[in-house]
Length: 211
Image (cartoon, rainbow, N blue to C red; front, side):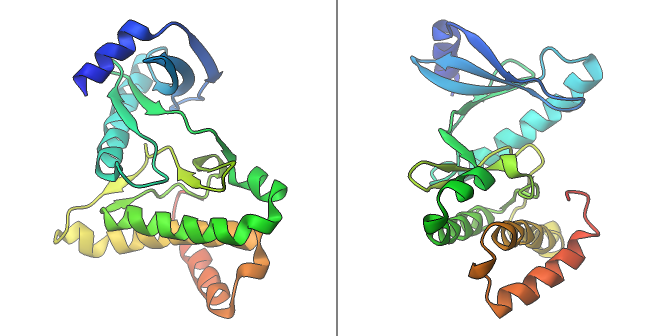
């Protein structure tokens, strides 16, 4: 990891601001990384309280992505960039909402892949918990879903009390998000079991802050 970051510092030729984050949010930048493009989520230009909060988010995201490396649909994490940023693979995709509007005939297959992807993330002991935000699910031109922005995620070790009591709840939050997008973008894909589950999870969601 240190060698990759050294390469990043030596080869970074330009930084392009993609989106300036609001209060408590990282600025998102596009940077050169070893001759390719990468995404830098960066708190360096924020006020000191936000930088302090940002360091916590950076650590949380790196920890989650370290567990998930090797899963198709998870961006590569190149590690921290200084004390207030994280350098990530640039995913050439678009929001799930926009992709589904353009590719209605391929939605069913994409959702099958998305369900498997979320299951694979959960199998590594990670809950994303912010998949209801449309920016956090990208779909490539080839129809491959990707999950991004793990700064609010939670990691659980097998056999712990938190894994037994809290992780099941957070898995349901992720499942609720997938059903939300399916109900909104492809309601014809919902069977009766899905509809009942969606109603039950929507009720549960009212108790959760990530709406």
